[in-house]
Length: 200
Image (cartoon, rainbow, N blue to C red; front, side, top):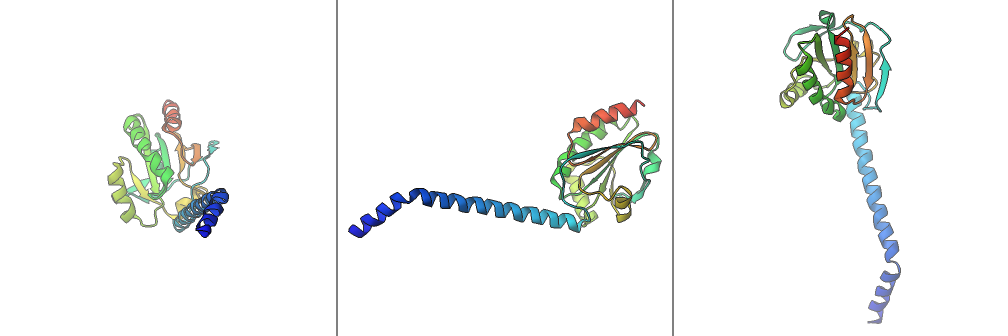
């Protein structure tokens, strides 16, 4: 009986220490889970040839001519950027495994539906390592209504190496880069640019 009372007294006196220890274990567990998730994401990004998503940044286009490219769409069509000269073009580098990329896509779908008759073209360049196997089911699931092409090392290099995704270029009617964005942006950012550039 005395032994049980001693145990009870020990527990009561050290209850706060036990609570602190449990909380500390939970914090460590959450940190390790987050660290593992980040490592997996970075590993997957590395496999795709680009680093994991970085903080959003914006780079003014400065009138730089957008590098021309010829890529194959998921439908087997040849897409050449210069064929859209005279239109405002958004070129979005993305991947199916990238959360910010997936968050932007519904906005791009709506944007293209709204402005495709106003000298505007939306183009997506997938950097998925799995190619058509990854991209085609994703397109059907999201209802993507604009051309998606499979990226190459050459086009990635020509557009500055693509340090993170999504990376999105807004190209004016003359074929110049009007703006470039690294990271997620809300629909309003792109819509304002499109509205402005289609009038020029």
